[in-house]
Image (cartoon, rainbow, N blue to C red; front, side, top):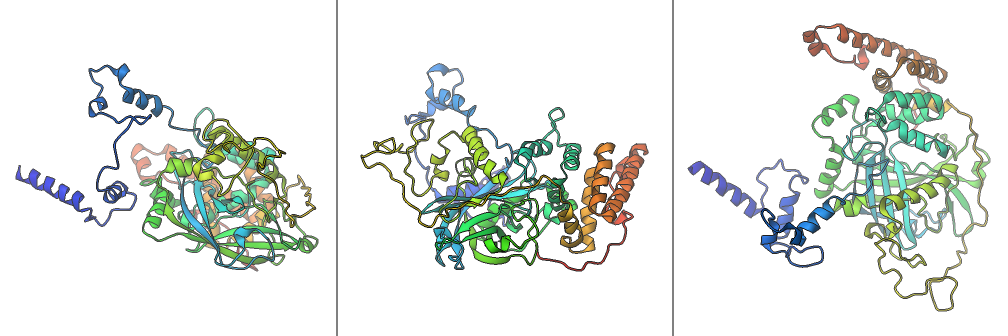
Length: 550
């Protein structure tokens, strides 16, 4: 009995003092205790939805008149509808607030105020996510990660949507649905199906370049803080002198890129599928603020006439030596969100949200994004999603009225039509806006050279190639044989040595799998594994002549 009393006294003392005697507490683990520390007394009276104070006798409904208990009705009628439709892609995510600071003068390239004036700071919200996991899925899956940033500028919101690899999966927007479906769960088994992925890749070979990046060390970064991200599209910029430039933006982590091997990711995943979210929250709460340098690779109109590749093709890199890189500023995230639903789940990022000085990309994928991002957000959040707090611009006056809440002030009693002679909102003349718009025609032909270049030059050493091949082999093992044969054929078209090494590794893996199937139960427990990369009979690599920076 004395021991029980002593334990109770210790717990009361611990909570009352708000000291973390257990130094292993992480910020995510002590969030509730932090709240109590910041609010020594209850934050107020509990009320019903309409504001009526809750009597303590209404908090228990056993053997009571339940139909006259408005608190019960409020509770059960709202809990079943407190979820909104899950994002089809990037469903599992987290976010944070911060700022962007201009560190270099880029007024030569754009008159966008957000990037002009060294020292200028702009508030931002950023959302990170895995590409194809459900909300309860693993953040350590080998797939693209995303970072979407909303800049709250004086000229409206500027949204930049980035992915963790510098090339996109396709350049024909018609393929968007099929890529998503192939990477999502099988409609019958409800399982992720590698056969569907490789089946589509072999039938749409333009996708193979981005798949190579995912199968390499870049496929699983060591958390959101330690990954670079790329807005992918080639953006058109215009200067106040009427000049036009074409740029690709890059967010480079100031911590330096770091990755997890497949084995490391699997070990972490077995204990913590929320590793990326936990790492970001703990770092910001501990004031180890994550930061990225924003830079842009630049081509002038004159440069466009000299390059021997399509700089608007989002499935390939720009060739080294054809562009120059210009630093812009720093993105710093220094405040965790206080409510995930309010600030992250309801956040709507649209690449079509641009500002004067940044007319935007001209490729066909971007043109379609203007339509389907808006449509998906209308479906998920309602037509007035731009009036949700996290999405509201600093300044907004429109002739858009009514509809499902939220409607904010709904423009009060201002005229609701244009033109009018009663002093409603008026447009302005952007004197620097370009008069001409570049029209880009793209080819349906498939160029496998970028994938060959990636294998031979972007993969910087033989150890990285071994991991790359091992990852391909591991994902090929459960794929049906006819699709595997098409994969080997496609790899042969890219690089003969690569196809031979993958084929050899695949045969070893299949033999090991067959041995497991024929083993006794005791042997199965002891030897159930896929051979490691070091066990594959791989050919010696060809010497490299260059190792360019990504």
